[in-house]
Length: 503
Figure (tube, rainbow, N blue to C red):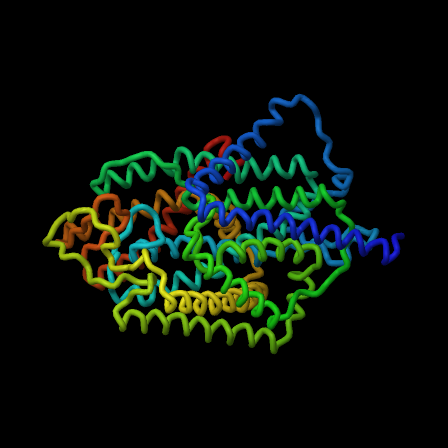
């Protein structure tokens, strides 16, 4: 048995490697922000690495044996070992966290509704959007999207990372990365090079514009970054042999909120300079949080945070998480409502009314919605830092509250819910096609009723003025139909031979 003094340098070395690894990834930000075509180069590099990583085994005729730890009986995908599993010689009790499946299902529905909301705000959605002007629905929609963005993709990274250690241990490094390149990498490469551009060409024609080819990752940016993070984890396990870690309790709610405030301010400070990071959309609650949540998911698995510590959450912390979430969430809606009443602006909302539909198609014009995107004032910077800090606190508090609520009330499974969970990944991938086509169909229905919409050349969003009721009803209708359509198309695709292994 190693002494404490022998373990300390090893732990310190592992920590240094982790810090260096994430620091290198963070340094990619200035490359994307200030180097011409840096974003495109990084996106191409990701695609090339995925293709090479997936095809290389076909060219190398040698067998690679998995790690010795694979001799252990494999666990099901959602098995959860206890924090003291490594110290027991008996077979561990397998506990399936059914509520994690339900949580992922709910988050997938929320992502689709999130993009439907963007489709009626004129920003943040796919290539066919309406309502790119100042209107009352934006007071709700902007706050709804900002609060969603603060946590839902971070939780996806957390849940994915939660199963990373056991998958890596069970399959070994080679099979682990091959599985990631197959299930994550293939959909990303196909979408960014073929499917995404084809959808954009179709939507350009529907908008009455001239189409052109441009790589577009759509929703699959998440898959690319999961490949990056999983490759980083695999590299980390190769660089330092996976010694057993001392079980540790999760951070307190206060510590998490402080961390969220700092990361939120850091994220907000980056936003004026970085709008996209190698396919990753940069908005509130993004890149720094994704790193923290992915690392948190790994630590949660190793230390039994979800199956051991979460049930022991005190009533005081549970109540505090819910109260903080409610206060900050209400503040977000109050902020956007005040901004709307004062005439919009601050890059959050347009500052001009909608274009008269009687004017017909209008010529191309930069910033026709009134957003000032060319100057950065001190007031805007302070506002961004304040909003980013609050959003970061909301992210951490609401995550704790949502995990706890899901554990208490969503720990169940039926035949229908199991099937819906199986199709959720496919539904997430096809939303880039289903959602804008449904929005287009709704726009055509409005045109038939005497409310046509027009797009300026080169714009994905229409600023043609529409009745407020049409925007709200359109959001409700397209959200419902898009969720149903995504699951229906996803289920059909999974029936195609060969695709079920990827989707």
